[in-house]
Amino acid sequence: MRSFKHYVTVNIAHLDELKHVNNVQYLQWVQDIAGAHWKTLISGKTNDFGIWVVRSHYVEYKRQVKLGDRLRIETHVEKTEGFLSERIVRFYLGDTSTLAVQCSTQWCYLEPTTQKLIRIPTKIIELFA
Image (cartoon, rainbow, N blue to C red; front, side, top):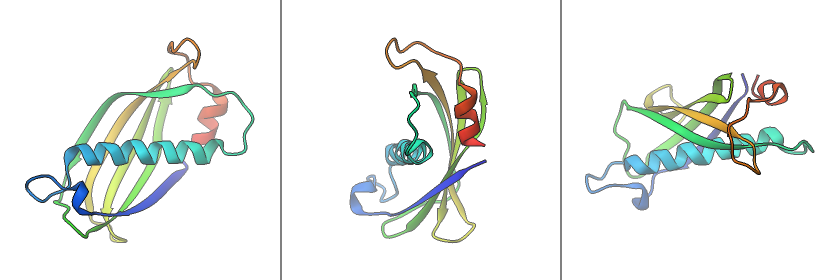
């Protein structure tokens, strides 16, 4: 399985009124890293691709993350079946193995013109492998 990682440092705009990273910020980072990973996988490819939309997010918070903390965000596609793909995103404190947050997201694959669900093609499943 091909993984992808990115680093962010928590700034004041990421915080809620309790001075912790806002829940909505985590979802934004989940979407950002998924998009960056996808663009990396298809870079230089001339195939026509469908579009991805979120079906659901399941987020589990393990540790508080605060101003100035550096996060390593890692993602990979866990499985694909039919028109669904499950992507895992994990947030670690810096370069440690300390898990702060993890998210499992189900993505649906759509035909770009009609925006109707379509089966994920083998060529895409192979990109994730």
